Image (cartoon, rainbow, N blue to C red):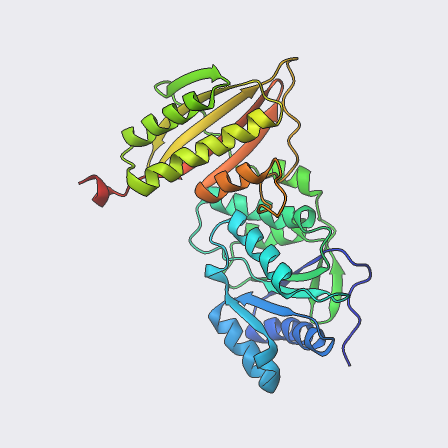
Length: 324
């Protein structure tokens, strides 16, 4: 018989720290079997090796399990959140939870990317709070860095070990945690190109295009870079900003843009935590443009301090071969 799931109807977020195939299966198999027996949609987004282990353990029930190779289930945090939401929207059944095994990929990521993924793991507690989703995030302690394994207990309220639920004493408020692990700000260098402050979107578009062309972008990549900057500026101006100043500079492998937004009255904009991670829905929403800017950028950070709201985004630059 399936074990009872968590009480309530909102999002439930558990970590699973495992150090062997047997430990992974001890948690994953009951989770999947109970969900399938209850008629719930179940997704396993994990490594190909773990998918194979799980399918063998399930036997004839394996055909009822949805699977995804986790390395391709959202390359960046904004894409990952979108993938979760779209799976739920597509497979949700009235009156039933949706179960997900969602293993993050940590290998090969830069320090900035690791920080972004840690923040996303914490942010899921906010972004998916209203959904009837039970998510387990496995962390393979044989391969993940020690600081990432420790972070699992700060970004999940509890962890599962088989069927045993262990509260995470180190669980942190998502907004506070996101601020704590934010990557260090890379200020604009003295030689950065500048324009504004301006409220004219045509001026923003012209500056974004000039700097992207100077960085070597062309064609579709140029158009998408300009769109990302314009959508970020549009979000700031639509949210109560009166003017936007822009800076741009080149970094290895990227062109960076910094948007500094001011408003009358000397106060920064009220920016919700984890803003711009929800994909657009049927009705227009002020965050839609920022979601698009996140999707088109390699990274996008929003910070508010004092009278300024600062958005920094990085667009992938042309590779060395493209410059030849």
